[in-house]
Image 1 (cartoon, rainbow, N blue to C red):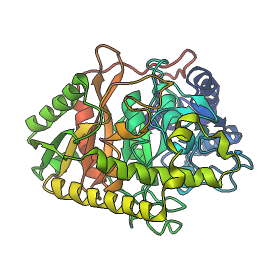
Image 2 (cartoon, rainbow, N blue to C red):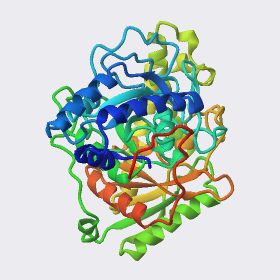
Image 3 (cartoon, rainbow, N blue to C red):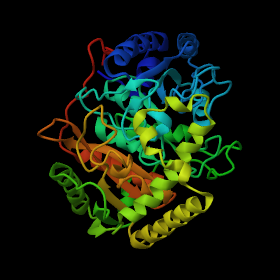
Length: 463
């Protein structure tokens, strides 16, 4: 049986398993996950010692927090004290190791979680796949010829393979939700600022990934709170709500199957979203089709902003020539982007955000695909146009820009490929709890889905 947070906690409290036993097993299995799907960037040197300390606390009936002894993986983009950070790219040395931890990592450790490893990602998070100049190609455990999505590729692949209880990713254009969709996971990119992060960012959001919505809710409950280190974070803390409280609102839902540009939604993906929307209708939600009517010109503005963001990091690095070839090609014209061009693109992007807000303001929630296709080759930067690297993120990227919370769960599997198909729920800003309540309802009312593809030597714990 693959454990989530509650299973680990229950086993520890009952004395059926100790954190020391669990973490030793997890670390051993992590090496298999690294060898099979290339999901691990570096192993923790302190996890065993932390697990021994956690074991002593449970023996004294004094756990330090709700995640005491729970194994977690975090994306290479995070700073973890005592561990190297490459940000997915050989342009950085990954040395010296981080002297301090990112705010979400500190929250995990304060709650007692044990980080067993950091996970692989593509260069600077600028691919919706798992291709990295530092780590190579990350693969999907459901089919190792396929991509796990990106840029939280290693976290997605590790969790789908049954490693850890949950994990952290980061999301600029869908980088938490895309691998969740490809790997059959649950995840949330919360309202911008809900998870404090240092250095503060108006573009990047930390996110929680897990094999169930309940684990995502628990993870967000720990890290989704304000901190003095992030002047842009939201005040207060995340608190979950019940689906019954959402039902009482008589909510309206926009069925979003067309953004106006990008890859055509394949029939199996469309069917999955429509099936989920039908269950919401049966539950009393008012569901109405909608289209946002965006164009490639809207995407071009966002693409130029992303490109300038990536080019800046490459230029500031020690080995800029080592960037992965797909990103290098994409950045060829980045030097031609003047300050005025960038300002024009940013203004255009913000105008598109305003149009999206206007078009969706009557909706309490939106329901959409995560990605237009069930999967694509592991050695490809993405489906469709490989010159415009993030064009296939049409259903995810804009909700980073609007700052809205967006969650994902596994609805079903594609009959032809056997790959998971995820569905995305988007809500109003600050309604992270409502989004997760709806997402959990859909997860609980879906048809039976296959077990996760745990690799040989996967953790075995008694029920």
